[in-house]
Length: 249
Ligand code: MG
Image (cartoon, rainbow, N blue to C red; front, side, top):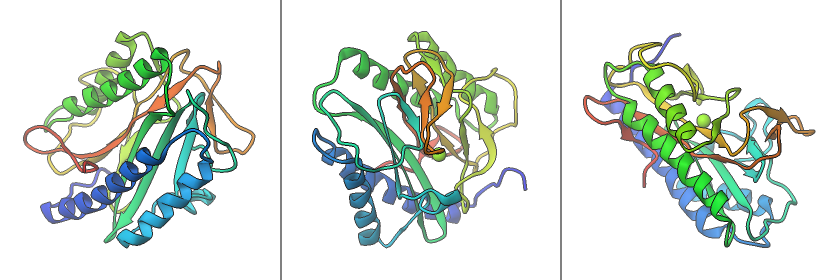
């Protein structure tokens, strides 16, 4: 199918889907606190989706059972919300996707539960920084590898590693479109970026090594060495200037 270039009209629809995602994540962020079960966050996400007249991108996707991915501490991505109770000092990654008027939005963020260690806070800041570095590299006529290299370079400059087995992706009418966007790579390589491409950039950054393992539920991805991991994601559109973040409030 190749990389789909969106019209201005389609990008406007994606802004609306992205706005739904940003709104729900903002609500969730404010709800995270010690003593909360991760399944309660999923229930809030479902309720907000219904209020906004949107549908979940994740629920039922390849059998995923929830609207929200909740990944705690050494969990990297694809955590299934359940009975786990969040504790003071945990860090929790919330990954959320919505379908609105036929288009998808996808975003993630990591937040601390109450007071967290400076190590955890710095990891979260660096991961957000890596996402911002990737967005800054996402320009018309740049190459896809420029995004990958910017993300990797930023994270590694802070002494962290980027997860290699999971990556960002094109997005539009489908949650996962071409191209795949690794969070590591070489500048000046890969497809040329064009105005109208819509991409979900999503660095997953570990304090320890980059390797991961799959949890016993066959969904949750964890760091192989048990180190903390953070995840930030935005859906963006390539323009003739700076990329536009579609999952902004
Ligand atoms: Mg994604």
